[in-house]
Length: 160
Image (cartoon, rainbow, N blue to C red; front, side, top):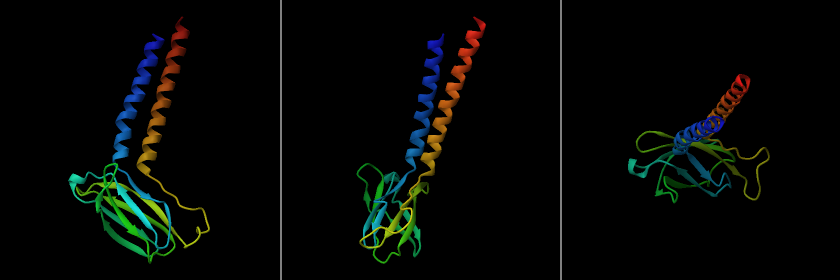
């Protein structure tokens, strides 16, 4: 009976992870590299389906509030565009992407630094709330499965 409980808990955890992780992975926007000097180029990539139309990357920051349309299909799938940072002010910029069908594809950040060195401070921060939420959900599901398994074991040993 114990082996069956372990098998059920494991199957439940793997199944839940299989369902939740792809949903979070579908909505992803990345910027590469995360740090570039003034005049450098960053590649904006979104996991939008190219069949739904172009992705629109909305770039906001210290001296920018502009839209950039995707120009190519990304190598790993999705859509991408190159952004030349000449004329950008030193600082952190946020990129949000909207797919051609109107769905959001998440956001990412990049930092423009002075030519020849990194800006003082903590450096670039990038984040994807959807992936963090999926990870937290998976950890919660694993914890719930482990607690259920421990309770069943205690209950079974108390009855013997």
